[in-house]
Image (tube, rainbow, N blue to C red; front, side, top):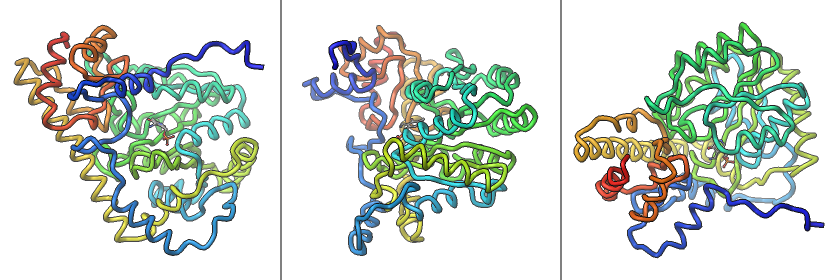
Length: 394
Ligand code: PMP
């Protein structure tokens, strides 16, 4: 059966993790894998999550199947969190999925069911799984210009020029905030201009929101998304609870569809049910039950917001400290882009040779292509990281 399968290829991010684990140097630093870490290098369980789990265990009455849509309170809580007071709210449905990965795949399958000839447009570059997920659903994929490696910012003019050429057979995938892998986000004006273009030319925006609260704040990070939800007749949204609730391994996320009418959104939901039934059928409940408990309890919601704010504050202060150190050690301001980026990641543009030298000579692990995870460092590591980057010619 399996004799003709090709040999396994290394996963670019997981293989860095394996090399890191095998490295016996005490001072090694992992800036590769995409999880939040605190100053002690741990990916903590949020206190709001711990308290929610205690409440759930104390009140749990059954472990019976939960149904194709997953946890109903979770679905409502996500709609409230993301879309309340937008015009799209009353025409939206949410379905719990196994992570945003599950939502991306289900929504890709939904697009393929509704319009098999649709083409999905991704940013250059985009999250490494976007292209394979879209293609696995049978959709064709193309790329719009996004990151300018010189300025390390989004080339909004080039992006908008390409998006202005798209029409009803096109889907434009946008990162809700804290773009992975670049860290460079579009301005609110660009969200507004893309919205105007979608209204005029009929393409469908699809927002992937994986880092709410990791940038400027829980509300600030979804301003662009909410603008679209207010103005557009249709919108697709995949969202992840992995980062913003620290629930990575619970595999919790949601697929949200805003339809031209609620009836059309409900038809989309019926299709999503069918798509889920023929693959995993039902999502796991525990992560969603935790999120529903946190968002349904004012005291836990406040605690969650405070903890999330502390996490984003840590990342912003690491960014500032990095820039200060680079400026001091290199007498140059060419690293200032690090404070303009949002969230965990920044695309540094380090070459293959530089990333290898960082790993071999300095025990600093960076993903190929030069993506660094800011949350992977402690404040005290910063002088050594900067020294190493400059030593390899960054
Ligand atoms: N979208 C983006 C942009 C991501 O970076 C990730 C991974 N962190 C995902 C989706 C998938 O997240 P999840 O863990 O919820 O499947």
